[in-house]
Length: 138
Ligand code: GDP
Image (tube, rainbow, N blue to C red; front, side, top):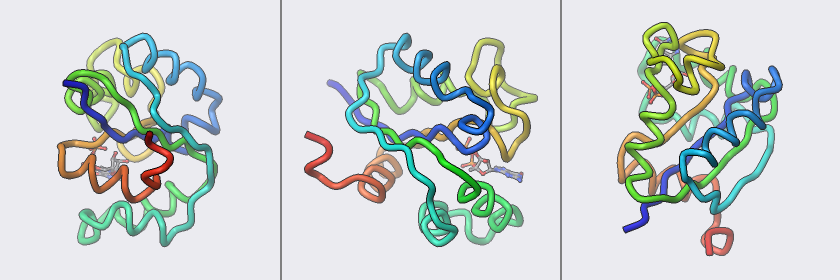
């Protein structure tokens, strides 16, 4: 059955002109784009989104980075979407990412790593609902 996941083209990738290439990779991998929106988010919005990381040492840097410029929010759908997007993204640290993955190709550092993808079903449900209203997901 088709599954939905949530993804972000992060501000580093938008700033560096990689949005189109990353969307093409997502398309080529068989994902349908259910919803998409480019916007700049506030620090508070970033803090709410990354709430689970609030105790981590990098929380302030991460939320400053995520609110530093436009990003692209997306809901993606395909069979096995959550795991397949994680594979397509590659490891959090691009230095450890497999050849051919989005982070290997487009990410510069463990923080500025080009793309976000939900890491599980519960996370996907929270993240989709955080950024998109039900009427945008028909
Ligand atoms: P992901 O699921 O692969 O995105 O990784 P995590 O959920 O562990 O971390 C969320 C995001 O926080 C990552 O995508 C990075 O942007 C950032 N991040 C993770 N680990 C570090 C770190 O050690 N240092 C910094 N500066 N940022 C990190």
